Image 1 (cartoon, rainbow, N blue to C red):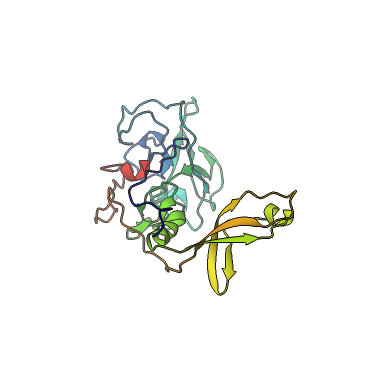
Image 2: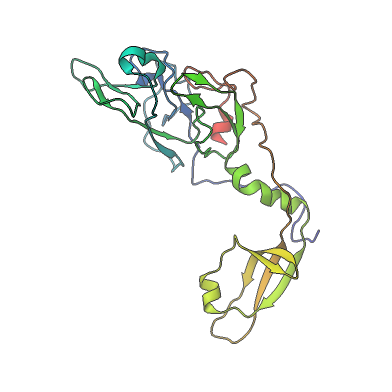
Length: 267
């Protein structure tokens, strides 16, 4: 392997974005504990969502990645006959009666129900395997059947690293070849340059690593550095190191969504 890739340990950090703690905030329901939906908790301290003395909402935060979801499932029973099966939120309107958000697309908005949509923003929604995991590390997740109130078995969901970067790192560990070529690049080539597209040269696929000293005012070839693309196949999701419980709820409290260790959320 050339000295371009020195052996050793490199630390990659993103000081701009911050991780987000996600939980089933019991302060959003009238009577706890309730199995309400996951939501991002913008708190200044890491405490259980079931803690009645949880810290106040914080305001000085770094930007963060959250997935917005208008949670309003279909096929649910009537809230009048089976309200307990549904995930809901109580809303303090400072009136004599508590109002509710009832996420049920088949239910009309009436009486104390002021919306059939639950506004949900999460970096990890552990009750849905189709919701993207926006933490760097993997997390245990499971599906919740809104119509029956039944949870499926826990599975490992891929975080940002294994979704977008693991293949590239595994490829570098496999010692791909480096190649330098000189190409007659035009302005239109630079404008449409896409580093995600592969280049086929003599039956071998290469990924563009660097374009060196492109000078459109000179009639000369441009130096381009390429890295060999190795087809390594797919990789199974790695079990999260801080979230590996084998209990039916996948290592977190099913009532408040809290973790024994939230490091997988913060990574």
